[in-house]
Image (cartoon, rainbow, N blue to C red; front, side, top):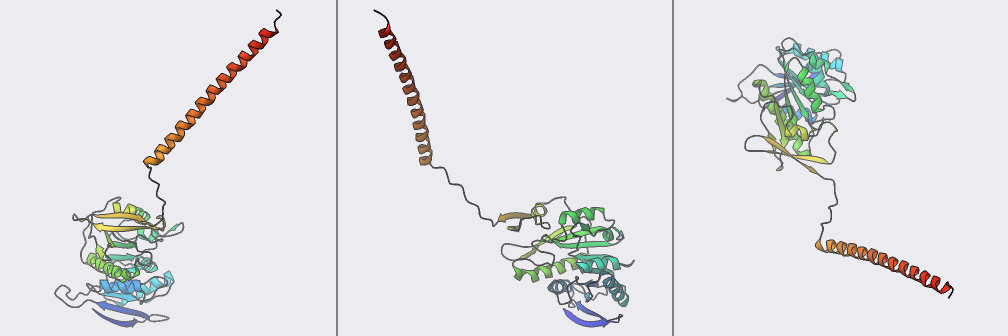
Length: 325
């Protein structure tokens, strides 16, 4: 993998670019097409999310990442300047705000849009209009963490169902908006895998298989499910953390069955007090107490009855003595 930096003339300041290309092998013959990609609002070309993604992507296809500012309109214009400087690139992409700029900068030659951590919503505002305006001729891939607070997966599905173009989705298990996962040492491997999956998608994709997941298994290995047929709800998506809807103390373990299906086993770290098992001794003691209580009630009733009878007998004897002889 080779990489070199250069600048593109732009007013008021030149645009810094970093081009990464795959090694020339029989599996990776020279290609003229490349992905034009940019970072988020607060990022740079050195941001881990950008470096990890481009590292994985450039193992299969060239990727040109450019440095921009945090203004969406300005970033979109810079995107257009980079596109004009290259030989009619057909694939555009970015992460977070950079993904929005990629959508807005798309041209008639654009065939693929790569949207990493697309910020679908902030509070009550939903940023879906530009997605609905994408040409039906463009293919779109979303890469979102199931812990991304700015992209609820269920809401994203609703938006995708109303888009005019075809779309694919990669869900990264345990990842937040910055594509960070726990344990942190696996973040780089997850980012690299994300880049490789997206590069493979650009090279060739199946219209009937549009869903996949990247996840960390219990042994600390990063896995990819492969592309699967779209379903309304899968065991993974219903258990996965969507935005902030899942309790913070809940985590998920993902496993792959021999048939290729992914299952999720949820575990909770919250402590709970186990119920004390019922023992025979406790049962016997409760029964003895209950029987003793019933006996006392019976004895009290008997005492009251005899006391009443004695009282009546005493009044009868006294009345007889009071009668005249």
